[in-house]
Image (cartoon, rainbow, N blue to C red; front, side, top):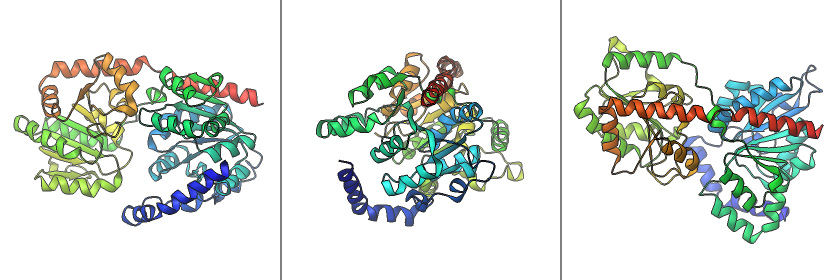
Length: 437
């Protein structure tokens, strides 16, 4: 069965090769770490210095930026608890790779291999991990099988089965029930975000004895430290005196509606600023062109180094065309909009603005974060809108300071009430390690 799976995966990659090549040429995606993805172990990992030659390893896989941020405290705790181990982090995306390198050292970070035995085995042989921790839901059949056969204990943390992915798992289990069950049997511990995620994991074939509920690690993310850009932009906004609408992680099809709503805000607040942060870096030029086409005054973060001539940022759009700064800049928001939710893409994480007590608005397509958004909605801590309601809700919040303060205060209280997930996660991992010993 694994041979058939590998053959089908090969066929899929061959059939979609033009797409991957186009992405590499047009956007530079997937080129970084290409050799590593095919099994070339980086020298920093495969050739250990004399002081660490005999150190065992813990391998944490965090797909992208969100998983790196969410699992950061767990990674640090494992490093403190096991100082004689190397804690190594793999990612799939280049943005995740960059952030992980900044947080944990580039010598400890590498790209996750493709799910082929020839690409996976070199890493397992070079690293000899005793524990493999996978953040969220990455069920790669060959990887899990080979990891288990290598003698490592395998844990999936912060696990969730989204509304969008559940039907696919159900179809897969219907046609190949044993294959999915055998794949999940290679995992020693699942730490689900919610009881519903636990139920869904068991439904698709996980052993219920291995599935526990620990909560969502993103509730334990520590607010980012104030950076120079936060201080300088904050001073600029204070000088202008207008409201600041921060629109984070926006996707294609959302920016036009947000800019239209912002035009209405400018009528009553001529010094207002809309900070917009597209989710995907390759769309920065596209969004910049749209802003200019619609006639807005625009500043780009990549070329903004302060207030030239003392002129504050006011009455226009500030395009955040950089990576890794959005979370801290939410602290400057009068109102925050979290994107990926006005279009049917499942939404994005609303916890980053919540940790600053900022009033939050999100669209009604939030399936990927259903439990978090529904929990906040039950605490009157988020406004959920469709395209038609968006302009009015944003304008009402900007004009009504009392409503804003209540919404922001409720968001912070909801966020704080769910903390403690990191401790539960680390405790479960330590027990798993103790069992392997």
